[in-house]
Length: 257
Ligand SMILES: Nc1ncnc2c1ncn2[C@@H]1O[C@H](COP(=O)(O)OP(=O)(O)OP(=O)(O)O)[C@@H](O)[C@H]1O
Image: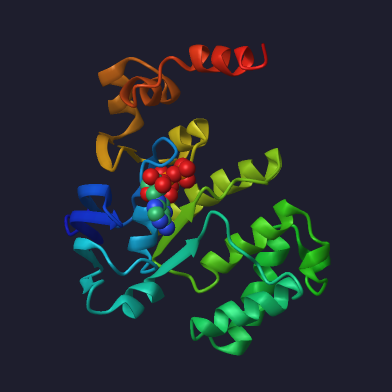
């Protein structure tokens, strides 16, 4: 492994008002790693991702990506990263081709390359027959695929996916798993937030578990499994202290009594 981190996060803290939601994260991510970033609702995953992608500028600590300091040149970092957000609004009065044209131009892509690549990617994602149809006629999963394409169209070094599988059918999930493996083979670094433990377990070569703004586990699935003798779901429940999900489910059912 290359021993220079591609991403170096040091003592990262984030307050929303008085509330400290990231409590001093230290993280080195190396080129070609597929990071599975997991944690309970509200743990701080999206906040980390938004800082890493330059969307939240007011943080404490240091974020360096490929030698560029986020505080000094967020635009420089944005060019290196393809980001697929969790709940993105897509301009669905546009066709996917028009939308990708818009996104690609924001990245400064040359028109011919952009159109050629957009067409190839739309076809590869099974949207070849819908290239010029307005996206307000698309299903949720079809829109999600266009969002995914918009995150990789400029061929970024780093791909950040925030729960990219919501709305996708079983075949598309299999395809995305395969895509992550291929992106890694191409030398890309992937930072992948998800609640789908089975997918994280399979595609990640390093898993980070965040809880209440702190990283509480960091390792390969194999090493975590060895330390905790459990599935990823079991490790998650154990370490984030929510083993009583049966009791929680009972409480919900009992609320109707
Ligand atoms: N814009 C905001 N203003 C105030 N508090 C916020 C804001 N965004 C997030 N938070 C709070 O920060 C904490 C971390 O939220 P974040 O969205 O990063 O969690 P997450 O791990 O991505 O959760 P989920 O799995 O539910 O998407 C939560 O307590 C949340 O309420």
